[in-house]
Length: 283
Length: 295
Image (cartoon, rainbow over the protein chains, first blue to last red):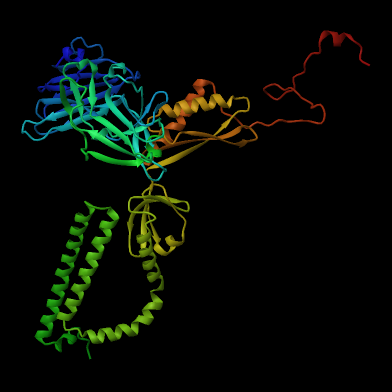
């Protein structure tokens, strides 16, 4: 895969890298160089300062020692090198986008309110991780060589008290009514969030916990320029307004014309997840 | 009459001797089996539960099997349990007095296990001592300090002591005492600190970082900036964030206070100017004063 795929913003896919060859991947602010030597992979990564960097560049493979063709940025000499040693590492590599390994507490920019007795569809974005997998020649399962958040989100706590709760990531995002209105960044995926409020009170939408480890990643082959979509999520507030049920739509998002699954969930869970009290989730 | 060390064995017939040897073999093999069983139980339990529970289960299995093996060995050797039980009754009173401390430690240990103020792997502080709990035994708790010393605390002492468990909860607050000069705009300092906390990925967004004003000190306005972080990142944040504050304050022109004293005198204070060698420096009076006659 070279620049043509990168022009469409699709930085994932498979490559074949022989001994003595290298690859360079730039996805947003994250830059990764990898080299294949005899019985080992060597990796170097750096992260730029601009969090909203829209750049996608994939140059793989090219001979070690040569500057990447059309490359503007050589591998930094003083960056630490990670070495992955294996008897027969194989030459196939798979670049995979994955979602966060913890729930993401998503705060929509600006305040919003879902009126009583209504249901609304919103589109929000969530951070992506960049993963490199090696596919060994002996047909065993893929081995993860490298995984980093493209833009490392901040840690946060989600719970009623500081004793009981869960360590999560924090993310701010516009909440739009159309997917096209969200900024198109290679470091984020789009989630269609359906909020159903059958209770008699309006619902202030300040923040919610997106179950990122349980979501799949999809691509619309008709419109790859929109980027990746996660499984759709349904939040249903109970009639008394005390609890919220979170439901993950594991099938392809219905608004995608020609869906293709790009990545499975990190940890599949049951379809209906009973969440905590409303005050802890949507408050 | 010369002492014959083997005289005791002359009265033993071969059957009795054989029985004793068999008992010894039974005990040795049984002890090995008990230890192996303990290790297998520990390996099986630790995959499903905590290290502390695995240790307790393995020790329970080991001691129960060892007791059974001991009784079997004694029985094989021909020990008369009625005599043993009778003797035990007599010695119980004496042992009870002698083993008061041990029994207290044993019972305190059971309370500690049931209450679980800490488990193996926790970092605890007892008085001025801080370290990692490496084992919770029948009579004592072993703690490894961070300079790699092993401390033994009797369970009885721990039951009465104030113990701080530093790693019980997943998140922890870091309190940073600061001083702001009286000429400093506190709002600007607050803005700088909050921006710095927001930019640090290891500092939690929720609970929010908070700036508390503690009071007016002799040289500064005393404040405390509190941030939360994952317990596993506490040392990293503590080591790096304070230096980030220093760099940010330098960059933004927020000054750190130094101790200041204001000196008030009842009258003029005589001042003498001296040079680098301590010799007085005489200033020439201005020309107007030199021309005027002194009165």
